[in-house]
Structure formats: C-alpha cells, structure tokens
Length: 113
Length: 115
Image (cartoon, rainbow over all chains, first blue to last red; front, side, top):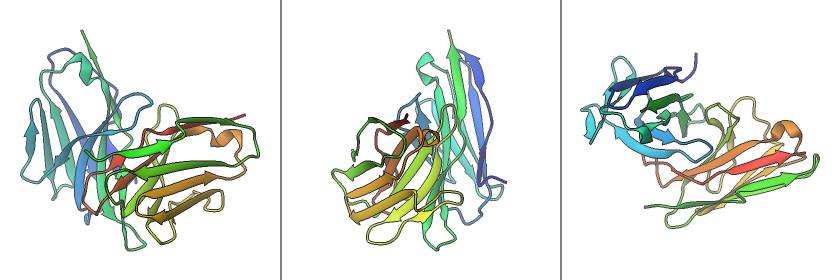
C-alpha cells in the first residue's frame, strides 16, 4: 500500500462547479499535512496547510480527519485557472528516525468553460 | 517568501557523463533538503532526504552510488547523477525546509536529457 494515496482523476468539471479531492495516508504517526498545486513541468506551490480544525482560504477548504487518516480539499466556484494537478503532502517519521515528506500521486483537474 | 534556487534548469548530456545539479536556499537555513524525480505524467517521487552535515537517506530502489547527494552547508545541496544513461532522463526537483513541520519550498527543477 502506498504511504499517501489520492483519487486517481482526472476530474473534468465546468466552470463554477464544486470539486472535492480525497487523500488517505497510512502512517498514523504522520505529523503535518499540506495541499500543493503543480502546473505542468513547474515546481509544486503550496496551496494550503491542513489542520484538524479545518481551514478555509477563499474558495478552498481543507479538512483533516486523523481518526480515519484522511485529508480532503474542496474547491468551490471552479475557475479555468484552477486547472492543475493537486498534490496531497504528508510529513511523517522515516524508518531512519528522522522525518520525510511524501507526496501523493496527484489528482489532475481540468476546468472547462 | 523563502526562495530556493536550483540550477541548471535544463541540461543535455551524452550517455556516460556525470551531471551535477545545485539547490540553494537563498534566504533561510535549510536543515533538510529533499530530492525528487518526476517522469512525464507521473507524480513526484522522493529519491532521498539530506540533512546538513550527515549522509543522505535514500528511498528504496534509488541507487546511492549513482545519485550522489552532498549537503555540506545549511544553504546548499547538490545531486550528482553519475554515468548518466538515457533512462535517467527526467525532471529533477529539490525542496528545502527550515525545520520539521515547516512548509517546503521548491526549486524550479532541472530537466535532464541524456542522449
């Protein structure tokens, strides 16, 4: 089982739609969680951190459920510019005793006019 | 915001040569740097984690003798692809953070093409 798993996608939605991405992680000792956005052949950019209390930034809402080891990202009123790959990112303890950051495979979103 | 500089942004080399990629944190001290590889239409794959002053920790399946990582200072990490072959052609990207739990900042990536 992969350490971080995401919806495979792609998601094809019309402008204005609401879309939700899901992500699960296997390591219960995972410490911190993020959603990143990556445009084609560019570096990932931080979209938002994810907290147990949930957090919202404009049209974007992220949720964390530690009991279910589940993270979600909700995008409301989709824009054409939201088209990208969304990456679920988890910081977890490494077997070496340190910490490592693992990316999910990403979910591709296409927003169409 | 924090900036991570990675260069070169692209490199073309002959099979059998070695290529060095540099990753610098410009305005913060990066205690940990990560190196990723990304093949077309695939996600980022973590290759190794490096902490300043210690040996890098490689992910399973990544050859440490082929991908040499040096993190000699708090602002610089290098990845050397030794004796590169066409199958090593990929997008390599580094990231850095100041401390655990902190956000990652990414370099702009290096597209390596081995002929």
